[in-house]
Length: 88
Image: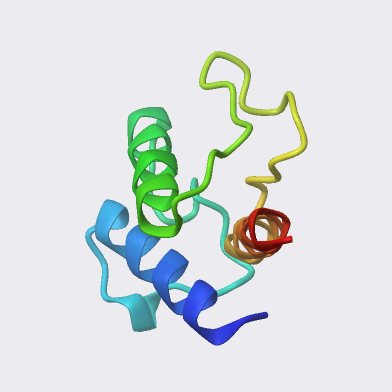
């Protein structure tokens, strides 16, 4: 994982969960962190803005599409992929 992507994604998720970044672990789900559907959407918007990317995410059906939100690690990996695709 790219350190700066990981760090920024964790910061965004921690802010939504009202936690310190150090309290967020890679294996936690957003649900584990207490982030509801509105918090998820706000997190996605913050990630898009922070990395200047477009996240393929459907708020009406979060399981649809190829943006994995099953854990913090999965979100970091998906953001890294989108950032790499944008730079290519």
